[in-house]
Length: 323
Image 1 (spheres, one colour):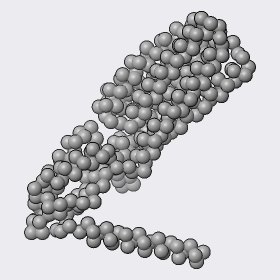
Image 2 (image 1 turned 180 degrees about the horizontal axis):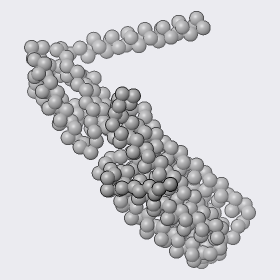
Image 3 (image 1 turned 60 degrees about the horizontal axis):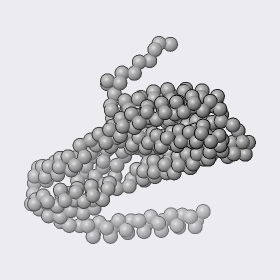
């Protein structure tokens, strides 16, 4: 087999970030795993396991982002942006599992009263890990701010928790080194496991909200509404709906225009409004779908929609009774 070369120069910033994350996690995994097994430190071993998962998740994120950046086609006409949200759920779940395993190991050390060895090398490894992780977090936060990518945000949050957990490991090893209390290592390992599970909740929640088509933030929705309302050629607007897949923002709305207006005039108004909306967040792609109304039919459409829903509910209820 030939060598597979990854040209990072041709990648998007978010894909390049996942490659960097995977490389850093790989280095930390090897170093921590060797020292963790030698020292029998739950805290160091927990950190090593976390780094293994980091590497796996960052690799998974690379392919998730690669897929999400593919252009829409006949099968996926809105693109595959939600793959990023799925990746966020997977990453959060893996983080949770790693936290549970760390708790399991900590409890085992409490019960078996295992001794912690090679404290000095363990401390040096963890200090090295803190320095390397700090630089990685700075880099990921920069990319997350530039791209507003949910996967990179999750990665940055994950490595921030690593930074805190690594600091806790250093504190635990320091106390054990000074006092000889091996149970402190297990206690800190237990705390790290609980904190990791807590941190995973935010990643999972944000990703699930994207999958459920939660609207854009209230401030963003208000600004979109202002852009539509401030156009003097628009008499009114209603049914403003928004969502995001992490890569693209989707906006739909009905705007009431003068009945005598030509289709070309209406089209030009829509284009100007779409351009102003897209400028609100240039880092994202925008798919904006305006609907032209000659009069305000919000209440008529709303009544029709409710009637259709009621009709559907009645139909399925009757079908259920027949079965």
